[in-house]
Amino acid sequence: MSKQKFRTAVFDLDGTLLDTLYDLAACADKALSHCGLPGHTMEEDRTYIGNGIPKLIERMLPAGHDKETEQKAYDIFMEYYSAHKCDRTKPYPGIPELIRKLRAAGIKCAANSNKAHEFTQELIKLSFGDEFDDVIGFGAGFPAKPDPGAAHELIRRAGVQPSEALYVGDSNVDIQTGHNAGIDVCGALWGFRGYEELSAMNPTYLAKDAAELEKIIMG
Image 1 (tube, rainbow, N blue to C red):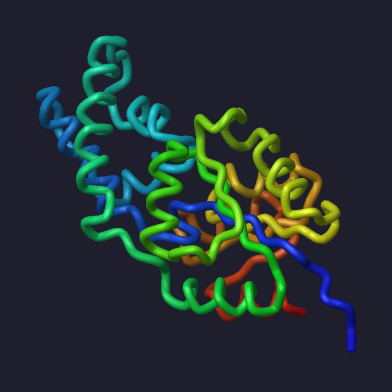
Image 2 (tube, rainbow, N blue to C red; image 1 turned 90 degrees about the vertical axis):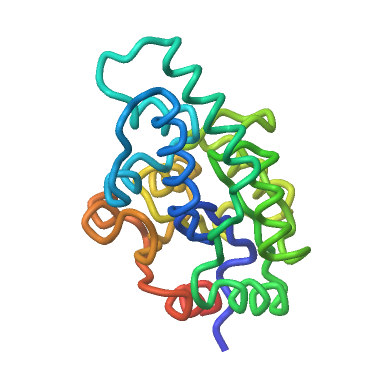
């Protein structure tokens, strides 16, 4: 029997573990409406996600917007999202089962997101209970992805070698994070971006669903 390669898996949150698109888009539209600006389509919104909420706000506002409008939109978004982040957010099919299987096999699971650390912790807890060994969101003392600092810390805390860790994410930011961390990385094709963007970043693996990801991790 071949030796299991991976001993820890580090997952992105939005578009990888959880389908958060509807709630993020609804909050973005609410913020734009309060600023007297038109909203965007869901397809547009999915391209704005991945670099954290401040960058999402910047991208959704019209070109040439002023800092006052950006701050107003950010404040409204954060207030509304705090209350509505779980309205329709849910794990992708097969993901809860996958996490349980990994944990049962002794593989540690961690989450690394550009979403605010408090929101990241809350969403992980609500969606997966105590199944995750570790969580680092933005604002927990590390730069935003694709900086590899948080990924390195999660690997260090897990007590494994970089060669035993896999980074899993659905965007170019995630693939770059894995590359920057010097670890294998798997593109999640079920998420917000898709094959064209992910394959262009030369990930180690691509998985179309949780079942394929399980085979990659478990061997």
